[in-house]
Structure formats: C-alpha cells, structure tokens
Image (tube, rainbow, N blue to C red; front, side, top):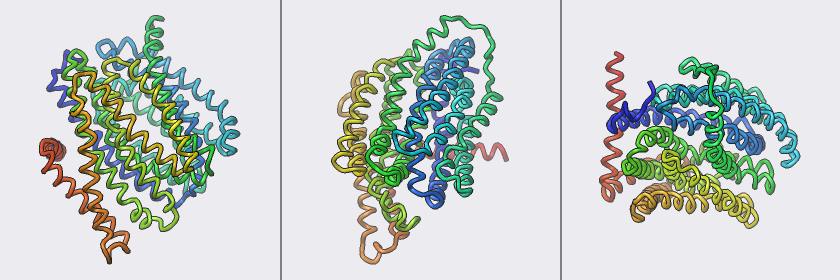
Length: 501
C-alpha cells in the first residue's frame, strides 16, 4: 500500500523513517565491510594502472547514467496519492532514456579513448553501457517500494547486490581480466535487479496514459535532470582533470584513495537521504516540521560521519602499510586529505533532499550550476600548482567550503539560526579532530611507532572512546540521541530474533 500523508500521522512517519534508517544502516555496514574487504583483495590482484583505467571510463559512464535517470524517480515520488496512474508513462520514459544512453555511450567511447590516450576505454565503456537500459527496468518498481517505505526489502536487496558485485569483481580479477573486472558484473546484476524488483512490484506498463502526463514528467524532470547532470560532472571532475595531467598509475592511486575515503560519507549520508526524502515529502504540508526533521537528521549525521572519516585519516599510513607494504603507500596523502575534506559534504545531502521534498528544483539547480565551474576551476588550479596532490587538496578545500555554504543558505532561509547551522559543522569536526589526533599521537610513542598493527589498534581504541567522552562532556544531548538510537537498533533486532525463534 502506498504511503500517503492521509494514512500516516507524523509519529507513524517517524517510526517508518527510524525503521528504514536502521535497516539501511545495517545494510550499509555489511556493504562497507564487503567493500572494504574486496578493496583489499583487489588492491593485491590489480595494478594501479587498472584502477586508473576504470576511473577514466567512469568519467563517461557515470555522467551518461546521470543523464539517463533524468529525475523521473523524484517526480514520481511527488505523486504519491495517484502514483498508480503515473507508472506507465514513467516506465516508458525511463526505459527509452536507458536505450538512448546506451547508444550514446557506444558513440562516445572512441572519443574518450582518444581524449585520454587509452584504447582500453572503448571496450570498458561499451560493457558498462549494456547495463544501462537493464537498470532502468527497475526504476519504477524501486520508486513504488520507496513510496511504501519498505526499506527492509531495499536493504536486503542492496546488500545482496553489493556483495555480489564485489564477489564477481574479485573473481574476474583473479581470472586476469584486469580493468574489465570492474565492468563485467554490471550487465549481469542489472538483469538480476530488473527481475527481482519486477517480482516485488510489477508496474502496469501497458495502461493507456495521456500525452499531458508525458509532458508533465519530462517538464518537471528536466530541471532535476539538469541538476543531476551537473552534479555528476562535478563528481567526475577530479578524474577528468587528472586524466589530462597525470599517468594512469597516478589516476589509479587517486581513484583507490577516493573510493577508500568516501565510504563513510556514502554509507551514512546515503542512508539518511534515502530514508528522509519520502518522509520529508509526506510532511510537505507542514514546512516547519519538515525543516526541523531535516535539521535534526543533519546534526546527527554530522556527529556520526566526522569521527569515522577522521579516524580513517589517522589510520591511513599504518593501515595501508600493514596491509600492502610499500605498494599503495603513495596513496596515503590522498586518503588523509580526502578523508578530512569529504565529510563536510555529507550534510548537504540532507539539505538537497529537503529542497527536492519542497519541490524547489530550481534552487537545487542554481546551487549545482555554481558548484560545477567552481569545482573545475579549483581542481585545475590545484593540478597546475601541485599535480595530483594539488588536485586532492583542491577537492578537499572545495568540500570544506561550498557544501556547508549551500546548507547554510537552505536552512537559514527556512528560519534556522546561523549559529545553529555553523555549530553543526564546527563542533563535530573539532571534537572528532581532537579525539583522533589524540589517538594518532599516542600511536607515535617510542617502541610503538614501529609496529603498524599496534598503531592501528591504538588509534581506534583511544580515538573512539575519547570522542564518545567529549560528546558526553560538550554535547550530552547528541550523546543521548545517539545512545538511544543504538539501543533502539539492538532492541529491534533482539525482538525480531525472539519472534523468529
């Protein structure tokens, strides 16, 4: 049954959102574990040049896939009361765009190979392109599931897909497929996802629909489409710049470091965003509650994501040396820099979801239109002055400044105080920085600094409890909220386990 404001009070929505976050958090925890382990295995099986090749291929495929999504899902979620009558036109628009996207990638592949001086890109891009229309088959069923807030289904499938993706990539790498190891799983899993989602929520695709519906979806989606395209171009901007100024080995080192550094942000911010967007949409008639819910989520996210990212930065040198010896040590500065800069982007995911829930698509587009040339300008300047390391510093500086500014503008416009928004960034970063720096300094004590494993253990065992203690001292309200949510998480799973016994 589709979730609508009429069927759910605010307390029911809160319960659904909390349950959804718990399911998706567990899924992300499993996914992060699988991703971390697979990255360790792939770092041994593949060379930095292989990582660099797939990174360059994704500058084409990721941008093309953002064009394909077009924003149909966001527009469809806005029609929750009458979503059934909009499924057919949304499906055909989405699938048609998938086919166009695949053909466009086929055409662009030779140009990208020439641009980056890498003939291997043609096959890689074409392989990933085949998966594009397959994935669009699941777009409409996925929206229906999200509108019903069935996050358990999404969490279970997403966990399966991530584990399967990592497993297949490792198998192909072990079979010496090189960079193709990253591309071959996509068509297989696209086909599996289409079947699985259609079994759960098959849309009525042959229902007659009106031309005005097509015009509405395309018209409403166009600004979302433009925003997503700009954001995806921005996301690939550092790889594009590096592809022009650095070797594939250097691009591979940076790509490895970025994938490693961004995992806490994607895990936590992605989950908050996926759960909050449908919940915020149902609160559209209550703008004050909507803004307060987004602010509360942003604050909790900040106090969660900062310590994990800063811990990652502190552990980078001893951790990578422990696992790989000297092979990936050149990636350490990139990991440290990016792990400190990227968490400042996390809260802007929530403010972006708030804008979409309020149908302020034009405002989101303005932010993206400013961000994209700014990001490229900063990255190009960094690359010119400092090569790959300069690009990493420029990227971190961008995330340290621009996303917080956008969140500030969004929340202050809705009546939230400037100091409240600034505290959301400053306090968690100061507490996390102090805690993890303390753990790092302890690990440098004489007779300890020579042992990587001991250093890694000390950084974690000192830094995390120190951070928890600082929360109790300086932000007891946040500590109480995090503690209650953890107890709620464990309590729910204990009750489910008892019920199934």
